[in-house]
Length: 187
Image (cartoon, rainbow, N blue to C red; front, side):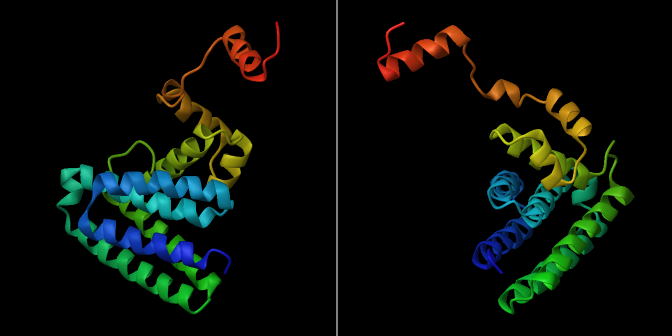
């Protein structure tokens, strides 16, 4: 497997953050792994980001955080991730993929059962990961294909967030003035 060491490290970190119920760390991890997914063009990193973001959101909801269902899910996902780590060590890429996708499915099921979300938490997690990749300049088509989300859904999500507000823009005249100044070109 091409990214065995990177996957191994990311799975280890995810297990640690899930165990600690470290909400902010899980969100930062999800953002980081979404960026890695873009660079590596590997949906399995999106799955790890989805798991992290989903758990962070579960811990924000006190009725979910206190539920025995979340405790059971956490135990099951930790078990699946441990098995996924073993599969990585044994070079079994297919089993690794199956286990992490299965974990995402378990999270999706709990979200449908306990969540009072308008959209499923894993779908929202994938939208969030896609928007993160898009904010780094990737095309809408590339991120939608990688995250397995619809372009219209992603465009709508981006339009309702402050992603565009995070990046400073300048007028074309100002931008060209800076280019000319750097290149030493006379206007």
